[in-house]
Structures are given as C-alpha cells and as structure tokens.
Image (cartoon, rainbow, N blue to C red; front, side, top):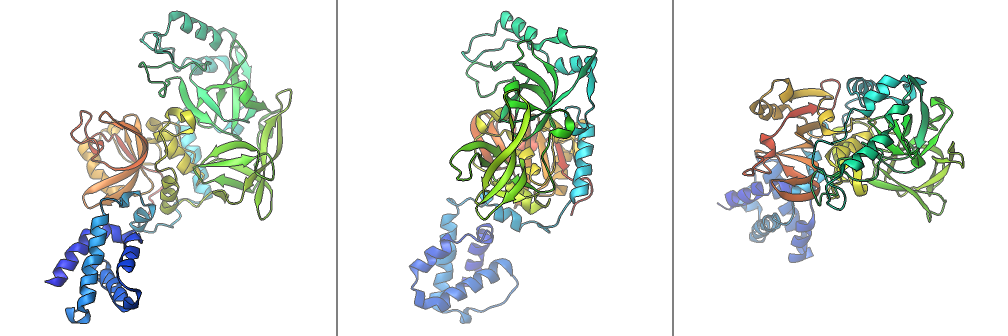
Length: 494
C-alpha cells in the first residue's frame, strides 16, 4: 500500500523531477537533520527507482519508518511546488527529452548550400557580395512598387489622426520613381549603426488603428552592424536609400551606412570571427568597456583582430567625413555571451539559444530593440550560420516541409503530422505567426515563440505555451490554426 502511494506521487511529479531542479531537495534537507544522511540517500535511491526505473524491486523492509515518511514528504514537497515551478520554462527539461541532442544536423558546407537554396527560393533575399555592378531600372521600379502606398484604406498617424492625401502625395514624391534610369549602378556599403528598414522613405508611422503605435505598417525590420547592403536607389530628399540587404529590400537612412569602392571591400570577415550568442551583447569603443559603441543582437558576427585574457579586439565599421567605409578596432568583454565561430547545428544548441530570449518583450519589426515572432526565429538560427527569411510566411516555406495548407493539407493532416515534428528544429506556422516546436508533455504539445496576443489577451513577450492556447476563443486554439510545419534541414535529420 505504501509503495503504491509513493509511486503515485512520484509519477505525478515525474516531469518536475526530471528537470533536475534542486529547491525541493534543499528544502527536504533543511527539514530533516543532516545526521540522517543514510535516509536521505535512500530517499534519493527510491525516487530514482520509482521514476526512472519503474521496474526495479525493493521492499518495505529495506526502508525505515523514518525513511518511508521522508519519501512521502519529499515527493509531497514537489507536489506542492508544482504550481509555482513551471517545468516548461526550463531548457534543460526539453533538452533531456531529445534523442541525440548533440548530434550535428548539418555541417558548414551543408549549411552554406542550404542558405543558397533559401536565397534562390525567396525573392526578397540576396547574397550581397554576388550582386552585379548594375541593375535595370525596370527591376528597381518593380521593387519600389512591390508594396504600394495604402491610399485606398483609412490609416492613422502617430497622433491617431486620419492620414491625409497630402501626406501620401509628398511621400510618393520622395520615393522618386521618376529619377530611376534605364540602368542603375549599384553602390555597396556596410551598416554602421543599428537601422530601421522601412517600407517607405519616412520615419512617420502609418497605422491601421488609432493607438497602435507599436504596430507601424511601414516598419519592415531592423539591421545591425556590420551587415552589408547594396544601394539601389535614392529618395528625392537624399536622406534615404532603397537597399537590398541579405534578407529584405527596403528604405534605410543614409547616415546609417558607410560606402565602399565595390562589393569586394564591404567585409573585413576573415577566417576568425565571433558570433553573438547572448540575446544582446555590447561592443565598446575602448578597452576598458566604458564607452558603449553598439548593442548587437543574437546571431551577429564580428571579425576577430586579436584577443587577450579580458577582451576580444574586433573589426567594426565606421564612416569618414565623406561617408566612405573605414574599419577600426572595437572591443568585446570576454565575459560576454559570444562564441568563436558558429555553434554546431544541433537540437540542443537551438533550444538553448531560444530560451535565452524567453520572457523578453515583443517588438513588431524590431521596434524598441525587441523581437517579433519571426525575428526571434531568425536570430536563434543565425547562431549556427543558418540565414532564414525575414517573415513568418517565408520562414514556413523553407527546409523539409512536413505539410502546408497551401500544398493541399487539411488542418487534421497537420495535427497528425505533428507526430513527425522534431523538437528544437521544427517550425510551426500560423497566419502571420511562427513558433519553434519543443515537444510534448503527455498529450499536450509545446512551442516557444514571441507572442503579442491571443484571443484578445495581451501577452507581449517571448513565452512557452502549449498548442491548446486560445481554445474556446473566437480565433480557436493554435493547434487548430496551424498552416504549415517544416523542419529546418536539407535532409532527413535524426
């Protein structure tokens, strides 16, 4: 009878015990005197036996009455703690569920080929160093008109006033379409300060609703040093450039860019480079780390010049008085969360990186130094050298597709295909949203994602949720809204 009771409590708390969380163990050891260490060891042995080796045998005779009480109390502590400790926010828990968590899924050559395939399939993406010296004017006009001004809609400005026709006329003039020549020489540059990538050459927001300043429809994304960019066109006021970046085309302020002679001079990236593996890491002007230069997001790369025991010396871009690209020294503290070269592409590394962003705020298009759902995914995979597209609609189309509504799969098909999803490297797409699949607990499946709201409830941060979230709401549960499932791999991963 005692054994059945203990086993019932142990199984109930299996998930918590598997995380390796120690607070309850420590509380147990403060309740019972240290001289009863034999009973403590016996409790630990029995718990391991009950939970991890359920077929092992022991008898009640092997346990003192004190030990039996201790086991019951020990497991009850876990039970009482379950409501305050959420195992789903522990990366070690999800990693412990993986098969071959450290197995390398793609080597450097395979990742390079994978990136090339993505660029070939996504029109907005490009290898900047492979772009030619000129581009046709017709192509530029096509790019500029890809997202038309929303003149047929009621839109609002930052003061919640309806946007006027005059604003649109002035903005259309600044796009400077009439100045596009038949053939346009391309100028190559490097981002020197974090910059917004905009749909139109203006800092003024265009909002779908009043009081929705955090959802500026003009905001595409952000870009950080030392990313390369190709200038295709200038605005009429000469303050903006229309650029091709590695992941999107859009308007960037010219004072955020330094220009090189040609594509060959836009990189200082040698064979040795640092990858930012923290959510954000500061780069400094000085060796004493007193003058911050830039805060770079996860996935950014910096060429290593030198190092000592306290710091990395890295190459950082700046512009001279004529706007010409120069490279100087900058410094990264060795206590910072960085890695020499890319992390190996493994399920463990992706989950570990994703959880470094857990709890951080949501930011549409990178507004306020925060991430939306797709930039979260993009930054995480950038740490292993994978260059994913910018938005969720594009991201769900790359890799090894398990299923997609656009390819004829039904919602029920997608639910069934979740059985083939690989935790840590599978993306789950909804209309306008993307998530990283983590795995399941009993009959519930979980994902980590940057989420603003669901069912009218504001979340506004990076969270772990199960796919039943939203059940009963007007928009339905996430699992009932799946649009696509894809594994980020070019082959059949383990």
